[in-house]
Image 1 (cartoon, each protein chain N blue to C red):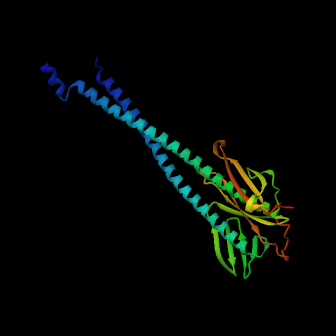
Image 2: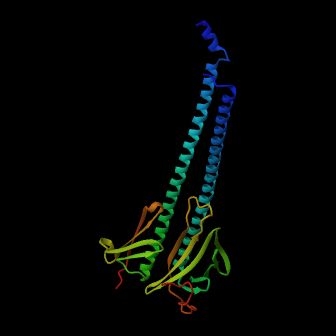
Image 3: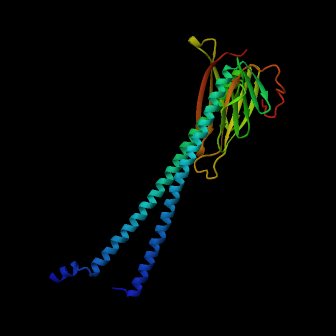
Length: 172
Length: 134
């Protein structure tokens, strides 16, 4: 049985609307997924750069601590006394600076990465702990908030250390 | 018979028009289904990627925590044979006497564990030979 032309046109219209609606939703979803994929790629690259920054800081700090003969706690960091020079590490919330011989040699800094420094004292030595805190992007698709704690043994404390045990960041 | 053949071959027959529309509808349904499968596969891929990435980061955090614990042991801050909870990490420290060339030293093992995404536990083990404390 053949429906009248008006009924067939109505069916065709409904069918076309359904197809267009579902197709538009599908295209929107696929587009959003593609954008999410690009965002993930960008966030992952930034995350890898942050980890590389922290690795570099860890390597340099351990190398300096190993070659140092003494250390002194400062308000915003620590001084490592090596055989021929004083290496200063200044830890601000967003940047760590290494100064050797009065000149800045290294700066570690990256977006959404903050630092803090603690020194733990024990009977056989002291341990420095540099926390690298990674704040997640607001589109936290694949990465969560993390704190990467870099630590190393320190050389013996120098005698003229000012306020060695009363620092705000000191923790036992 | 001859009449039917002519009717079917002609472009204006109802039979052919109906099937053309049916093929067209099937194409669209298949494309929509394929798109949905693609979306599902991509979503699963993103979830899998997030899980793997989280596990890798957790493993790195655990490795750093275990290194920190070994440094604390060297400095005499921590005691072996203990279980410590720090920053969400569970650290188990055990020791055994060193043998052969390591005799006279203590073999200290630090096992760090932490739950990653979906409650799946990730563990890292580091060990070192340290001088025994009096």
